[in-house]
Length: 341
Image (cartoon, rainbow, N blue to C red):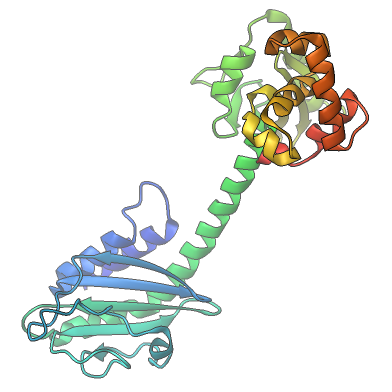
């Protein structure tokens, strides 16, 4: 009973998917130790996609057929669907399992809509004793809900990671302030670029400091106005790169700042810009500088070109991008998906 409780506890810890959780291999290792299995596998099938965890080595080839590799320990998907839920299978009665004498115990259970989990123990030597099958039967009712929880949390974390990546690509982020103007939380990875590019430093205790006192005073004023219910007004935190913050009160009596830090087009790889708009590398290099607001004379100086070369190349850029001038280049580059490439 103590071993079963420990495995169930580890099982739900793995379901959380937290970074400090030992995870599913730890659950399988506990199960292997308790049943004296040589190896344990867990397959989680979700609408044709399979995630597998294991503990221990793959099974050895059959002693009587050493020249053949070990078959996959699991039945193929069609055979697996023929397994009855919550029934403990031995090596001789698993549907579709290759003929062998190596001891096996397996169980399958539902794990949410269109999903199922298969847990399989493999052992070298003598067969499993009855408590091994009894333990699988006892764990099976917990396994499905735990995997369903893990899948839901994993999906949410992946979605959050995609959203965070897009926000970083667009230079967007957020800062959560307390009523006392300390930082309670902020977008992952936002602190370093704020300090490096805008001189905004967030200390370990949440206090925020700026390169100039006037910006700090303006932030305190904006926080006070937001707390009083005023509509958000843009607060300029830095001119280069341009960084603006909008602050509004939340329903939790906190203050949420939404931030946008302008990205420079010249920081994008020229190859990416060229591929995105069908430009040559030279045209892409000029387009980046035009997007950053440089005149043709300034762009030519930075690229080491003559002004005439810059003018000639700009006409090629306009034609390839289907715009009529420099403002068209800026609009086309800033409004599209280039920054997500």
